[in-house]
Length: 408
Image 1 (cartoon, one colour):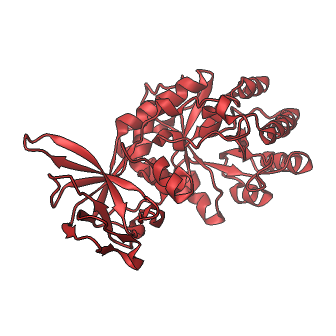
Image 2 (cartoon, rainbow, N blue to C red):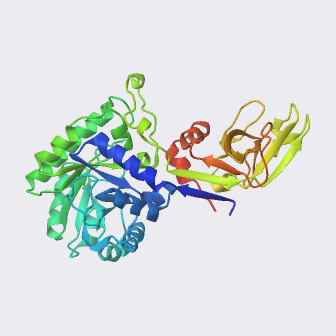
Image 3 (cartoon, rainbow, N blue to C red):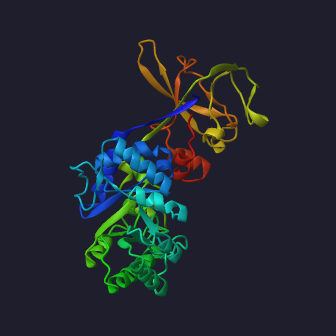
């Protein structure tokens, strides 16, 4: 094993509680664990969030949902009962969370969805037809501006609601997804809210009574400019409960708030969150360089003084981004090297990446770290070097960094 991931279930639960506190007792929190829990391991995170009291979990596919359902059974959660309107943060009966299949499904998935009591998201007549006769509860997604998943308010939604009733399906929830939740005072979000209100009014006119009305992501919770009783009031207007869907914040990260007045809108969540993932490797070898020695492909780094380097057995094939490379012209990323001093105490040092990150190997500068030796641990992601740091250097978002880690 050249690298490995350590997951803190304690931090995951603490992040969940911070989100729940931020949204208040009248709003439930769906824990998004899709895409293998953003690279953190879907089974372990599902169990930890269930223990923390999450009433809902969100997965990518039916097969991921089946995997989660089995993991919850194996962990001792009752397969016979599912959480419904339990108080926020409580799971006294050991019931399993509901599982929302968030990214669509195919006809061959229907049997799996029914067998494992999953809740599919629907927005097309074809999907409704595939589920005909199953008696399943479903959530309908409203397209208010993403132009991705979802049925449009108006005639399309009216038709879909009729098809749902004719197919014998239960409308358990209605939701939408905001395209600019991280933007302070976003006009796009306000427009989407008005469209969603119109869709909920249509649902009410059809005498349908969903239990859940949900909208919003980690950024919606983090961005106080978006914080309002709007969602709670909208849900109450149709006798439902409000819910937000949070993913990245569960794992310790939120994208920065954007917009012209972002500086005046402080983050609501970031200071309360801690990274759940620690990605580690070990020093594979050490090498001394003389003045003029170059490092790595294309000799982008040349020693201007005697140096000592440590080689780490990870690279871009493992998800360590090539943009973290360091040259003489541009500093790159770093790792936190953990050594033991003469007294046996653990000491952490920041060690800069030098030269190009290659497919399987990366060099870091340990000049001046006298205790550095073969086998020392190096933290690639975690405290001291976060997915935000990687994302800034790679000009991307922490979501992509976390999902790209491939330890092993």
